[in-house]
Length: 284
Image 1 (tube, rainbow, N blue to C red):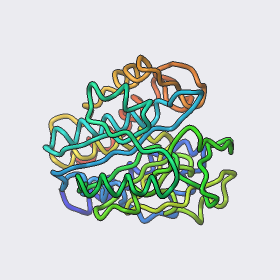
Image 2 (tube, helix red, strand yellow; image 1 turned 135 degrees about the vertical axis):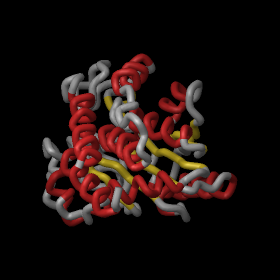
Image 3 (spheres, rainbow, N blue to C red; image 1 turned 30 degrees about the vertical axis):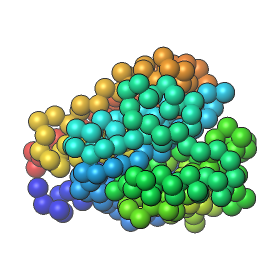
Image 4 (cartoon, one colour; image 1 turned 90 degrees about the vertical axis):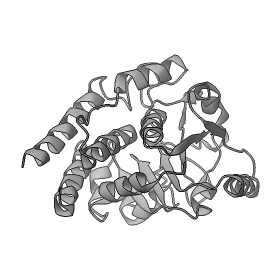
């Protein structure tokens, strides 16, 4: 397909990702340069080396399903492509995922201690790409907040250093404005009733649910490479696995295989709509 067609499909998927606009991400999307999903897809397609995937948002004494499921989907895609992905998160998450995924536990402590840990990791095993998905980002006061404005800094480490010290491309995915990398949309976020994150990234992807952006990337990349099927992510399996490990829905706080309070069929329905966009583009 032509780059023009790929850009049109990217723009259609970007709009689909924020169609609900329940947290104002449609308004944020309108301020971003179209084609960011395609640009992010190209970064992933070109990467055959080490990729660090930052994720994990604390809630109700544990962690939410949104973020880790998308990280797992991207991990599987990257590994299938010959890259060497690793999930970077808080110990509570890496402990339960490490039996199936390469994981690195994030350092806790002062900002200088965290920067030192990130620098040490990058010197020891430099990444070719860093992706953040639904990871808390610090606000202007240096603290992390949830959507209700509660300070959650004690439950998670700041991870700005992993973006700031990266000498490779960085991708960030968020759905509320308080996530790592959302500083790219500072002006739009100022209109929302939140304490926005201020860190920057190379390519920002916004969505109604962060996981859905990972699913869209997964399908889009397969479409770009003329794969026979674009719907290879088993959303229910990913979410059920996480719930069995202690994850909860980030909005309800319940141990259900759902994302951000949406019904269980919302993620699969989104992916079906994405598939329609991709299939029609091929037919045209």
